[in-house]
Length: 288
Ligand SMILES: NC(=O)c1ccc[n+]([C@@H]2O[C@H](COP(=O)([O-])OP(=O)(O)OC[C@H]3O[C@@H](n4cnc5c(N)ncnc54)[C@H](OP(=O)(O)O)[C@@H]3O)[C@@H](O)[C@H]2O)c1
Image (cartoon, rainbow, N blue to C red; front, side):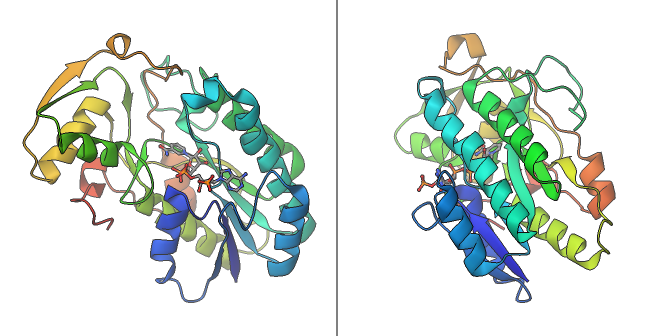
């Protein structure tokens, strides 16, 4: 079974490569942006024709949340046009698409975990382009899973955990936002869940699993302040942490105050066991 992974040089792409050796029955094809530019439909068609993947995991995305506010065209090109190109290539090759989306499609104006059926209302250009990407996939190709996730971190790529550890190496005190609530997600746990979904679908009769939107994050919830505190605790780093409000840390993009995702649907459909975020966090650089 061939599984094509786009955006292979990114955080989730690297996490998928990290676990791929545990699945010898799957022939993973990892394509970085230089091998497969999702904004180039001809390039997409050629790669799909060459490998004829049964599944495609589209991790490729424009992910610079704040920068997107000043370059919306680029974010749209990658997150919307790119998503459409991938969906069209999947359709031509009867490939099932697993596309990664985000908690930032929501405005965060509720206080209970978001269901897949809740109405999105992005507060940022990034969130809007990710939502528009979901919509083009839904319009183009029915055999899709859109997996919304949140607060990805791992030993790979750029993420909050690595930023905290880097800052701690030359500072005694850090101020961290404590009024945005969400769930950190170990990218390796997400990678395992994606491969679990593929394995499950492959064993099911055609039409056995309902396509559509699924939430995945680790379990539980915390603020960025709580997450930072736990990162330093797990890594035995002594540092003073100062909780601050979002208003004292202005950013170009507005982020949701609350973006915890309800995982009932993905757990019931695919029989996944999901770790609590505290258990999923390990000393750096171990990703397991
Ligand atoms: N990180 C988070 O906290 C988070 C939270 C929720 C959802 N997500 C979603 O999860 C997915 C994976 O995120 P991530 O953390 O792995 O992001 P990432 O580390 O930024 O990786 C994204 C990858 O996409 C590639 N890419 C950009 N433009 C491309 C193009 N035109 N064609 C092909 N590849 C292209 C990048 O390659 P280059 O570096 O070569 O440009 C990069 O390797 C994304 O869909 C993201 O929206 C992330």
